[in-house]
Every structure is written in structure tokens, then in C-alpha cells.
Amino acid sequence: MDVTRASQATAAQVWADLDEPWREAFRQAWEALRAGNIPVGAVASSQDGTIVHAARNRVHDKDGPAGEIFGSALAHAEMNVLARLPFRSQRNLVLSTTLQPCLQCAAAIRLGPIATVRFAGADRYWDGCHDFAMLSPREAQRAQPAREGPRSDELGVFGALMSRMGVGLWPRYEEALRELGEGPNVDLARRLAEDGELERLAAMEVNEALAYLWPRLTELCSAR
Image 1 (tube, rainbow, N blue to C red):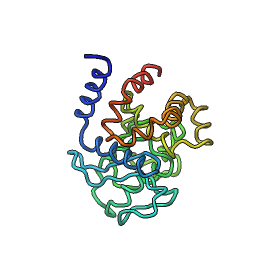
Image 2: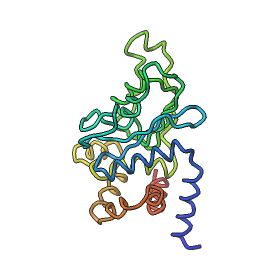
Image 3: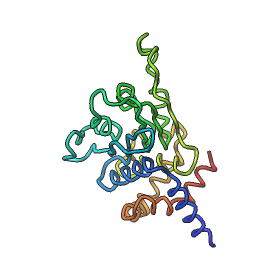
Image 4: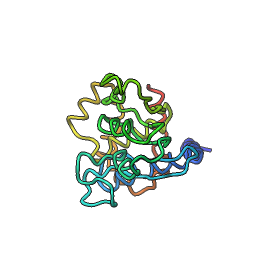
């Protein structure tokens, strides 16, 4: 088996081994990319993996499903998942998201019915923003959602890379990410756009894009 086929086989196996909430979060992120939004997807699920709601970033959309936010800086994937969860619903849900939540989403998660947050890609821009214990004695006493992430494998790199692709790559944010050590991801996202690969990738399904990018994701993993 040549290197390309070996990479495709490895990527296919990793994808197959993911639970359905993870796969759906990546599908949602890819749909956000195709729709011209920041490529982030999120899923709320029960402890046994049953999906309760899945959503994507909709900051540039002119409409969206009932109950979700669109056309606004608030329209992040995690916010759209949380917006669809009933008030005072069960508090033991798992939130799977392709990127480390920002300050806004971390606050909403803190107030929502989420017991565990799983995130694939690291976003060092928002490191530490999940800890609200210092705000008040009441918050210090409340249990914070358990955190699992970022992933240290190719899927973690893919989650972060996706968020830098398309409209997710903008100058001021790019500069800040480079200062935080995210230059390799930013460089690859820029090359994909400039070489025309991004357009070809967008025509693929997300698992096909994962397989296509796998060798470069592996390189980024090894360089950490």
C-alpha cells in the first residue's frame, strides 16, 4: 500500500472509531465552511451518546432554524446548540465541539445544562476563559463542567485548522494566533486558500477532506 492509500485507510479508521456526536460536530463545522461561516460545529448529547441537538456557526447567515441565532457575532455553534435546549432541561448533557469555546460560549455553557465539554481543536486565544470561579463565592461553590480537550491527535489539529479556513482566517485574529504559537495552522490554512485547494476540499465530504489532509495533519502533530 502506498503512502497516500495508507493515510486514507488510517483516516477512515479513525473516523469510523469516533462516536456519532463527534462525527456530527465535524459535519456541522464542514457545513459552516461551505455556507461561508466560521467552520465550527457543536453537538449536545446524552451520556449514552444520543444526540439532542446539533448546530453550526451562522455568523454570516441571513436566516436559520427556529430558535437559533444567525447573522450576528453571537451566532456561534455552541450558542446555537444551547439556544435549542429547554430551560431547566436535564443537567447531565455532553457538549462536543470542534474548537475550544470562546469566552462567550464558555459563559453560556457554564449557565447551561452541560456536565461535560469535549473540544477537538485548541484555541489558545481563549485559554482560561472557562474558569468563572473567581467571579463570586456562589460560582466558586458550583461544580464546573468537566473538560476533555484539546485532542492531541490529527482530529484535534483538524478541528483547529478548520476554524482558520475560509472566513475564519482574518488579519487581526491571525496576528494574535501567531503570537500564541499557532503559526503552522495559520500558514497551512492560508496555503490551502491561495493554492485553490480549499475550494476543492469544500466539494468533499468532511471525512474525505480529513483523509486528503491527513499527511499534513500528521506533520503538524509531530511538530508540536
